[in-house]
Image (cartoon, rainbow, N blue to C red; front, side, top):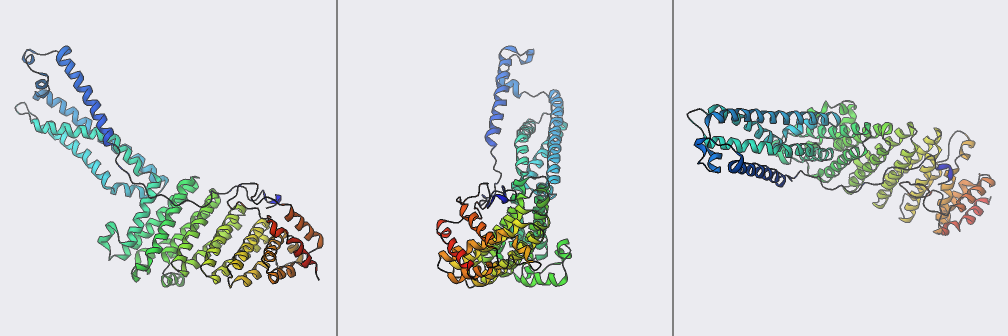
Length: 543
């Protein structure tokens, strides 16, 4: 890319995300810690108890002959009544602390990310078990403080209560650690993703409601919306890591769904009454709803619609995430291609076009630059799989949005579109794709504006892309294809052609001098192609 491009495409997001690691599960790492705390408490108590019984403690006359152990287990009813009353108050205070801390933390997490966090937390079996144990401790401590009388000391009951209360105190710190681990955003995202997939595939708890497709559809839609809410809320807070995680979870679900789609019952693809009232579906015309059902793509449509919502929010608050959305959309399309689901492929193409329209309307040059890159990579993948008709559709769309950007005075976007179309032509030629000739015609129309000739002459970057493609053809011995480009450029002024030639010859570094996701300089030509520049311009000079 030339010097005039540095203001347009500085740094971008960090390329394609790596394959995420399996979701982390909370593993109890605290038994050893609890044992240490218990041992320290026991050593402190036993050590000072023995010192008191041997040296420092004051005994009554009746206790003079008693050993340290007998002094410990001799339970006086009056003393126990006072001690157990205080013990009950301690356990109730512990429960109050636990409930207060948990309520505040869960509410903050639910407010920041998604309200479903609270629902998930209070349905969690481990959480219910620990909270139930705290309540049992309270009840036992209260009851045992009542049953101790001056005439009867229930030694076993007192010992059991003491053990339970001790265990409650020991559990307090690990329980708080478990709460914070449970509310970790990445784990919440992974948990929601698994729940959505379980609902679709009737796994886990959903086996009991396998026949209730309507309920499963509603759970699927609700889970996807919660992931979208997390992404949108964190985008507004400029939290790229969590937002990217939510978008990735949506993509992972879509990929797994496409793998399992063929095994689903036909009834699944009809919209049930529970989800007909969903705002996204209500907004669609009846014909569009019927089309989603007929094409069996309502789930993929819902995922991609959430992508679009996140993308729109990212344009205003976190533009770097727009690139992530484009990457994840490409991954979904490639998975659909792997399963030969052309309806999903067509849907992904429409959403790529929607991203481009939104980015152009926001005059976000960098986002368009990144989207074109992902769009081209998708087209190359389709070309390798023999879907030339879809490649041509993408080519026409790229040319259209390049021309649209030119009309809105975003010239660099037009240059980017031309560059990517040129690369697609090269790949089509190398793969001997039947779509090559038509794709070359589309490429040559990028700078053909219907208004005036003067507008065409401003598209200098487009001409460079055409020259680069012509040198590729000449280097490959494809003279007739290069001649089509020559014929298209014969109306250019000689001094303009000479300056283009000089600029292309002057670029010697393949990589652009700033950090970009593509890492290439648009104006770079290797030596083999530079050697063909003179031949090309000589052909252009022929009348």
